[in-house]
Length: 270
Ligand SMILES: Nc1ncnc2c1ncn2[C@@H]1O[C@H](COP(=O)(O)OP(=O)(O)OP(=O)(O)O)[C@@H](O)[C@H]1O
Ligand SMILES: [Mg+2]
Image (tube, rainbow, N blue to C red):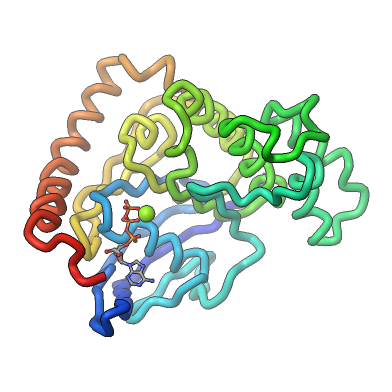
């Protein structure tokens, strides 16, 4: 089990130059902290800056103002201790399931990685599919490969941007429960972006609701539902429905604001 990385956003602003040459303010003074080993979801209206925040955490972009810190150090490059699972699959199409999952340990020079790879293949339920190529897998199975690819490196920080949004509802709910049970055995800090409140509540220690862009933290909900947790067991409980309503009542206003803006300024010069 790794120790997980604490994360902080200190007064972070980020602006992008648009193709028209104007500036677009994606984040303005975003501030929050995440403790080592916490699972935190970011929810907010479309376009508010969630993916931008992850991009900064990943070291793929730098803030225009302020600092993004991981483990008490400012992030200025991609760190090998950070793992990613994004919406679109990042599996290597020319490699088998086994080789896709072995890629990280091989790259890091891990000797005798075979047992480790087989353990992760089993943890994500892909035993028997080692020789399949990604095009021979279902969407859910490809996600399992992506999860194993990220987690086999024992990232102290795992960034997930709508990882299950392309899956059907049933597969998605199975993957949510599998992610919870796998994550509970790691020490990783997770920052998880989703539009699905049910998923956010089932997975998280905290859910941060972001404002319509540029994003700021509008509300910070602690999810006190007991662990180990399974979405399928808790989604109709009174406690779950109560927290769902509390979060949605805050998020709904921001979704309305973002939607009204879209009606007024379609395209907004991106
Ligand atoms: N490289 C870029 N250049 C210009 N504008 C950008 C760039 N990246 C993001 N933006 C703009 O910044 C805003 C925030 O984008 P971001 O992708 O972070 O939103 P999001 O909250 O992840 O949205 P969604 O929920 O739809 O995924 C958007 O208006 C987007 O168009
Ligand atoms: Mg996004």
